[in-house]
Image (tube, rainbow, N blue to C red; front, side, top):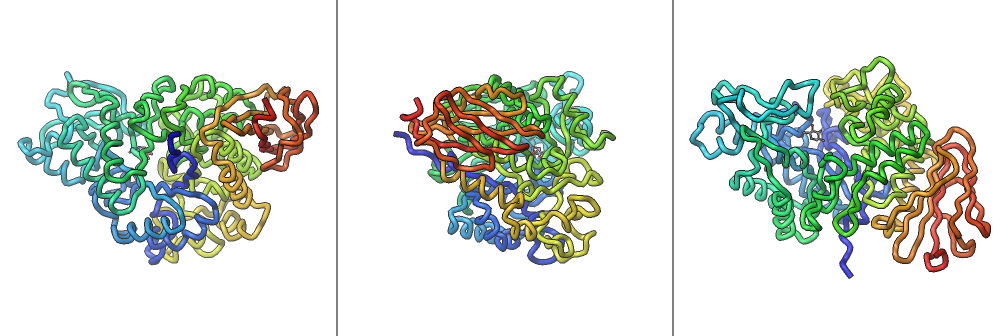
Length: 544
Ligand code: NOJ
């Protein structure tokens, strides 16, 4: 039997060090501040941290514009602080993944500076240039509201360089073996500092046509990364951020030789949309369009991330509906022609029952669940902030100044705390919710604990049932020995749902949820108040 990798049973929590907790009062979160909050993270029950970029950077893309791969931004700490974090996290059984950005660097990176100054330097070929932009390969920029195209002129080099994201993020020439060697060295370095693996940013753009001739790379690029990390650390894992077309997603697993996990953007768009519009059809559709990845790898499922809520994987009509349905009405949250720069709580109208149910559903799906820091207490966004910064405000710890995030002045914080709305730190904070057994935070802790009691769920087989109501989702996950049945009521009214699967009473136990159920000869009936959920578990040999 193949040994299960730790990532298959993990519960991932993603955070940005600079907005999590400030230990030295300068207004920026830092590694020591994060270390101070490890009790909180452990109590939440998560088993793995994914840290967003913390490297030296001009921060024109929140750190996804890296100026030096080998250090820590001085406002967040030092490499020694990073090592201390990984040691302390490991002592508690918590793994640490870091974010690595290899599709591009910042224009401030030393490689780019040398590349533009000297066309004969080896660094020139680390990037993609053209002297004849009219003949060069063209494609659309990934940030269409902000950038006109994929070529920008550099005065020093007197050439145009290729960039799929912002103009200050020149694409690396990943076909160049010297660049690949650099990438491998960076990965070995951070594994050596204690990292347990990496989220590979922009994995899809890494494979897209690049440069003057539109050169492409194949899965060999990622198989190579996987070989390098495994040779350096046996248990190291790679997660792909690859928002590719559904039918192409299994490619990234490289038949078990490339990525271990992939963010499931398809499920994300459909799950949040379905729960929000109180209709289960998007979950049925997601199931139809996603490829079968059994044996190849596993999905990393999530409700929100630190970017816009990207709706491109919905059918066009649903995308247009979501644009109006979820926004504040003035269009201020819509970005890049594809999504809302809102948090989960904004999308669900500040309704903690709905947020809890959405997390229950996320954790009731096969795959590795990923929780965005702040969603567990229902933090909201600040649309006054530019672009995607709206969803990147500091963690709200208590109702003291700056929500307990920092003792600095409000104007000195990396981003200001949310104030003046129902989401302000006076109303939404960890301290209040820790002392309330019915709070969103407490409910999410219960959901995480329930999932950890049934780790086999992560690679089970998913079957969606007919629930008899368009706004109730009933599904089953089968593993070798166990069958789980879940019911989630998306409606604002009470629902009774009868499931025609034979379920023996004696062998069935409720694992989680306030919803009621009773079992009769012809199946199970769920009795569900608005936003109720129920998790049932049974011995499969008795059920079949
Ligand atoms: C995906 C990251 O999540 C996003 O924040 C960033 O802007 C782009 N990749 C470019 O690195």
